[in-house]
Image (cartoon, rainbow, N blue to C red; front, top):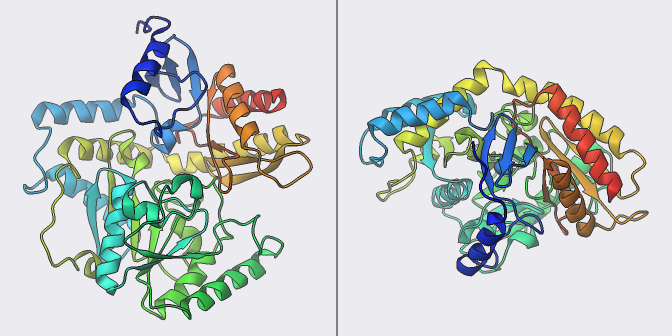
Length: 434
């Protein structure tokens, strides 16, 4: 493929700034225009090849330009591109059947949307109607999307531009293991303290509709509680009829390696009442959705449709992508290669004074940076490492709670051992350069 002429990305950046919002974030001092990709690599408009360790914000789940997915999209587009949910849609029914069976939720129903934000909106609508309550429990440091209601339950100031919301949001401890008032406790004590905090919170207000929680907080910097915390929460919530919504937009489809869904690390008290998903299932196509018990999903007492959710083309992509993921055991690959990558990153970061913690599971890993000798986050260093990694040919992401000081590493789940070694070496070089 012929590269786009040099210098055009700068011109495109100028045009971008003239017609798009100032708050539409771009990575890098000199933003990149990506023109094509293959496998775990992408190419910039100037012809530079990059190893992609971020996958379009965890969305390119299997591989760039996966032949099975592009073929399915092309074949479906050649038949019919769009019809809406007002007509029977065979690919939508087939994908819903597979997702329902994989969800672990009994008597499951599936509603498809176009994004994780819209999926979480739908889950909040269902929960508030089912419970006749607009009070929502959410986790500190959480992120659930950019719509009005999703912003209202996001516990991360960097991604919450307004305090106005249709919901009453109550924030619970537990999503961040190594910061906060319970960080010094061992795992069992940490869980007990968070459960006590939840019970105390429930005693001060009207019964809430639901708890929504990411098993691993994505935008928050890939933080997570000890396994079993949400199972302990569920015992408390179930006794009061409060629903549990597991936000699997980033943790779903085997990315954590150990489990197909993030909630399965907290399964002792059973599955969630609802789970939301998006990102990886479409491998770049716009798919989101909600899985819920039938009695919860069917509680709407007014008409509802989706114009673009469940479109034949995106459903065909999702079916092909899910089939590839299962047939090639990409969850197992995430566990094996992710474990190797985590060990390699920990070794690379040993002795680097600005690294506070290397954490994560599967191919969902974070490196938290701080001011050397302190616990103070260092967003400046995170930005500098992001730039240095790009200069070396590696694309990564960043996130974090109080400050954006965590490097986020989430390559496609087909990552090879050689590519994991290469990426770790490039990241080590970027860290030591900064």
